[in-house]
Length: 309
Image 1: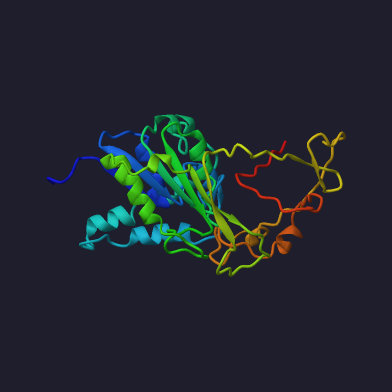
Image 2: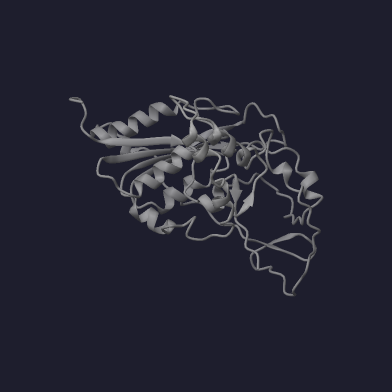
């Protein structure tokens, strides 16, 4: 088109966001920017349907075969080729399931190389109750190209159609970003904070949460300079002790495996995200280690991790 500069951007939610990240790593000449909403680059560890090689409790495994068995749009042709391609071949889910461990199927080229290969600016949007929330701070920290992020109190949804509330009109931010990246508009976007985050107030376990109390805050950079890392160590009495109080003697705690344990990790949609209900049924069947009661509010911003030997 006469009005087109030839500069292209790609954006998407979920799988569309996965594609945006991976395509940016290939550096097609026309691609100048991308936006990833509720997405992740860690497909093995964070794909909500097959986390670390463990199938998740949802309908995805069934639906991917059923949906792919339906004739495709727009012509919906059903003929001999259709039956050969759809039903007379091995289900493609078996390819997925054969790679239960982290191998080249998941990591064709290392993630560190992906971060280095991405050379165009990007905008990353995540939700506190979404299974892919950890990708936003990771991308801001590891990408060498300009990147900004937004994290709000929603699940796996576009921020203008959130659950729970409050949402935000993210499309105005997207237009401002794309005007700057594709058209070279001098709109001050490069001076905006690296991270806009919704800081939540505490709320009790609630499977149907319509509104999350809290407030928005801008952080000039990520990681936040005033932040600190808190390390806690499991103790023989199932408590957690601060750094410097590691257990001096080896300890052994046993657990009877129950496949049904952990269902309470998800909300009403039952996937790795959503609002958490009461966790006591899961705690009763798990190894639990508690810190001392908190004497004042504690803000956690970032990704918690556990190291097991």
